[in-house]
Length: 396
Image 1 (cartoon, rainbow, N blue to C red):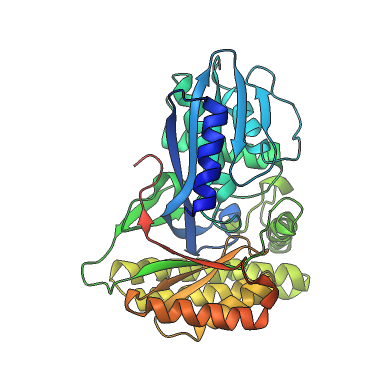
Image 2: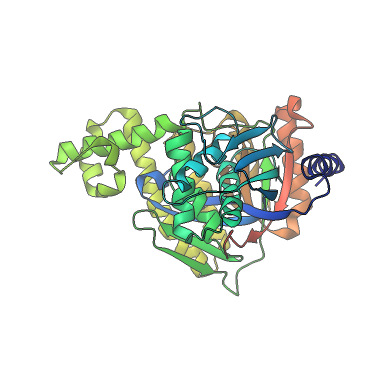
């Protein structure tokens, strides 16, 4: 935390709580080196929680009122747990309203809370929305004496994003935030929610995570994110019809339902955009399986190469990745000490993550900043790099 952020946090805490006692919740950000863009198709993913995230300082309110301020976002969020607006209000408070509405489907809420939220890294690509949602959900359950299973935490947070905010994401973000364990790789099947925490092999080379923030923030609402999801679903629906499979309702169709050989047989009948999106899905599934095995045997270099391949497919088949993120990925690929990486999240601005050799830290940081700002000098002062490590999930 820099001095400006620390001063702002202290000021907001004092103004909000006026010296009263507070409790704190921490929800980590996540990275996903492989498995990008396929969780909503019930695909496989690998990921980690990292040791930076969302901090929420709060105290209960007995009248059900929710009052939230943020170090990073403008405005004040106010509502009552007994009177949640039925429709989103199009501000950062929608994630809190949404998860409150989700919990109310199965539990009674009597208490609200007053809180101050701080994000430890710039917004974009690290699942900050899911981290904020889970941090608030955790605090709201605490003040109301509600205990949820890990799976219920994930499903309530997902409902908030899908049904209230309107983002057609899958469970990748929430699962990494909840299930992850330090020095373990989360290997998750989104079809049946089964997962494995694969420990770091004792012979694995040292590594650390560097987050390169492009200097351009992004949001999923209003981006092409939902369109990409619809293209994948459309491909699955068409492939089922071409092959004579039972295709049911469009909303329930996923590419995980369609065998790879069906895609290979009928892919030329798909529109080009649908074919490329599906190509990403099937090749990413293979990369995730290979990546999990590389991690299991302690081969961080092979795992890193697969992450680079994942990024290439996201750019060439999934057709995402801004000019800024593509540039960062090119620099990473051409820099000694970088095992692998990709842009993080949906790829609409935001950041890149790299798995790196700590012995090369200084040269990686220096070269990346120099080369990136040479191409985007207007982002000087906005671009930043952050050293991170794997971390436990919210409920470990």
